[in-house]
Image 1 (tube, rainbow, N blue to C red):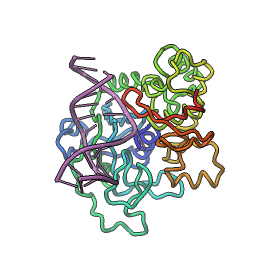
Image 2 (cartoon, rainbow, N blue to C red):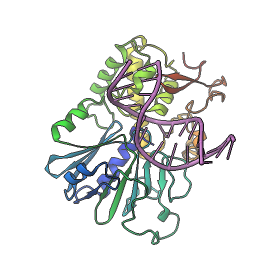
Image 3 (cartoon, helix red, strand yellow):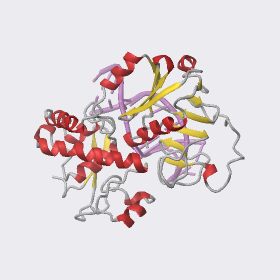
Image 4 (cartoon, protein in one colour):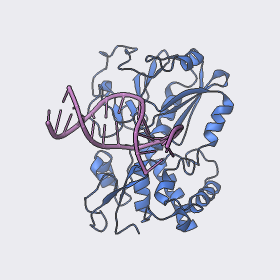
Length: 312
DNA sequence: TCATCATGCCGAT
DNA sequence: TCGGCCTGATGAT
């Protein structure tokens, strides 16, 4: 789903199957017609993610910036490489959607072709389903973009400015130590609740509502604590934890934050949503540590889950 | 068939 | 702080 780990996986997928090739770019829905015309026929030269945003680099320096928002997703067809060892290639990445694939627990969908069949009944390229915003295609692979919050073509300077507006992302920073120190500064100089600062994409980029709730539980930190009251070393610990969780999420495609599980428990949880989180989505259920019912509150218009006993 | 919900973000007030 | 916007799945009616 579209927190940072998903977007990094999308970037990786484009590197595997699209970078280095000329792309046919179109706008089935029409809303991306101008941008598509600028990119159509150009070779894709790079694919990178920063936070929740995807940047696709094209010959001539043009950059396609995509933000999936809450509802966006990529549908993938044709020749698509598996991203996760031992798992089938994916047919959809982003917001949870189910179109032609079987049941899966996450925002990623295995492809119909993956469940034993050859997938030969799928025409290629497939007709765009619904009103796709954009289609990027090589002669072998197709990526359809649906429902994004942002999809725009930028010149190199504007793309750099968009990246500069984002906070630090442990998956792209060269110097994790220096980045951690900077993040700790940004987290501890404002009176805004730490729970809101974690969602602020200009501080640490890529954290969404699930990772926010889970990271604060892992730190046993009350989300309502003003940032400036959080000890610097605790703030620094949040960065270090984000680095660990993000790397794990990129590897598995799943937001699994339970560090208490053994290998078998972890393997089970990867396929069972109800076992993946400490507090997210568990309102009213007993805290996994102390048994106190998990509460859900509104913080700046988003749902915030926490254990009122463990996090203080 | 309808209302509600969702892992996000922006701009007006 | 609020409403709006992107889209589709789900459960109630």
